[in-house]
Image (cartoon, rainbow, N blue to C red; front, side, top):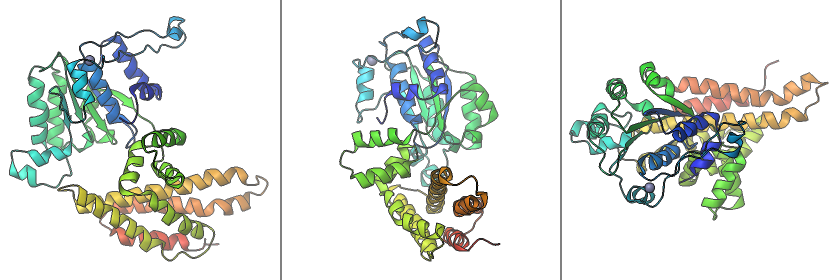
Length: 375
Ligand SMILES: [Zn+2]
């Protein structure tokens, strides 16, 4: 578990809403947890599941500040950590009969050979019927509640979203459904209107470093620094960097970007970007059965583009305060390479949606970036 519930609950006003809902004892039956990748949405849903499924939660208590009427932030009830339900959820190898995790890879276990053989691009309605609609109708097996967590809920296909809507419209008692998503706009407005919302934000860099130091004490100071840079506030991205050694993207790209932004040639930037994306996409497909190579390639390029934009943004915020406000022309000139980089990344991101070859796209970006500014 990357973060404790208390840490997460403290970080965001929307999450404090969630905390208050829990403390009131009337938690809404359906929630949308939205925000960037890897900022604790799924972890929070899992932690809440433990509380909701535990029959011996400690009752919520008002904080001292709350009694003075200053800040209304009651402490949410806590699971007992000692009952069969809590024990099952503390054991990473055990399955809890009333916690249902739904994700696109469940299609690999479908009874239908057609569903099994499909590329894992969405959550098919068949998966939703087997893992949500049917168990929602059954009684809880252990205590008095059932929890469903749907990861990447934006991947539920349109038929599936309508099926989900029916479940949300007629909530079974003691059923809690958490839709976890990075793209809430892909969910039907009618689904949004049936759910409560909690927004999750990126974490500060020092929180990411602290987490890495605790959970990966073997990381060298250089890797720790670069993984934190790569993570950009997302523990999920930090884990991705560790799993696929993506911090090496930074050590590879830093000197090339430095060259381009200081007017020196960097002819290998385009091919290097393409190689990095290709290697990551291949490693991802090798590790994930039925993953689409094309989707993995695009995801890899998106990840690279986001990193490039972030590096430029960082340089802008570092350099801007050092510039002389009395000389706006010089300031403009100093910042221009980074602004140009950000614009080119945005263009490339738009083109990625069409069927342009990722290698060409990255090469084009590098060539245009290296061209001296007109005028
Ligand atoms: Zn318990």
